[in-house]
Amino acid sequence: MKLLSIMLVLLTVGALQAQTTVNKTVPVQSGQKIKLMFDYPSIKVSTWDKNEISIQGKVSINGGENDDAFVIQSKTSGNTLVISSDINGFKNLPQRITIRESKGSQKMVFRNKAEWKKYADEHGRTYFMMNEGVDIDITLEIKVPRNMETLVDCVYGMVEVKDFVGPLTVKATYGGVDAALIEETTGELVAETNYGHIYSDLNFSTQKKNVQEEDFHTYVSAKPGSGPKYSFESQYGNVYLRKIN
Image (cartoon, rainbow, N blue to C red):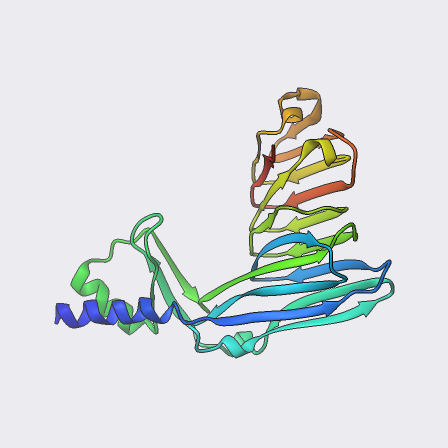
């Protein structure tokens, strides 16, 4: 019986590896602004020299069973190209039980409470994390035209910024921001969080005049070099500012 339970868990973990590939391009007109709005995906954003937006990534919803519910849409609002995503019929998708037995361990997903109870009875009920809901794992790598003003607005996913040239504003409500910057080519930098922390190895961050802290709110601003403005904000997550030499 224990062997069957272990096989069940291994099959469940294997199902998590089923993913759908995303590969989409969206043309951009000269002079447009760009707005990227996502709820669940984790985002990596950078710039390139083409006049189009490239979106590539992987989607796994309930181990691949509901990947077709994920859609990416685009529209023009005034002078802004808006790209967003949705999970169709989200409220009606099957719920899963997800656990991690320790921090950093492989997650295990069970289709229902009965499966989880059976496993727990045979292996013990100790776990580091337990979650009940739709199992979502979406990562997107997005490239936008160089020097186009861009806003990235994410709710749950982490936003990673690297090799980005142009004015950029990132708002990541829960996931946080991880940005790698060249100080000499950064004209203005603003970072803000209300309940998270700001971590930085940039030279300006050692100067107290650039940091304001009050209760749970932390605000950092500086003009370290010459170039575009970068603004990073996370309501509940952390903001990481990393130096590129």
